[in-house]
Length: 83
Image (cartoon, rainbow, N blue to C red; front, side):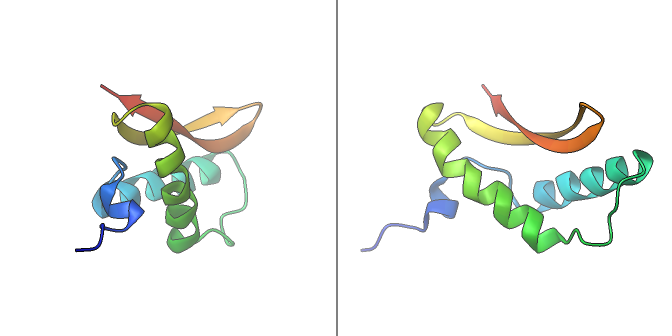
C-alpha cells in the first residue's frame, strides 16, 4: 500500500478554503491598487500547498491556515498555525 501524496497528509486548507484565501488576496490587492491581472487561482494554490509540508513539520501536525495581510504597503499571504 502506498502512502497518500504529501498534500493529502498535510494539515493545510482544503479547496474551498483555498478558494476563499485566493478571493481575499485578489480583493485586497484591488483595494491596495495593485495589479491583479496576472494572478490566477492555480498559481496561488500551488504556492500555498508547497509551503504546507514544511510548516507541518515545523509545527508538529497542527492545522495550517493562511491569512491575507498588508505589510509595508504590499499585500501578501501569511501562514497561520491553528491549535
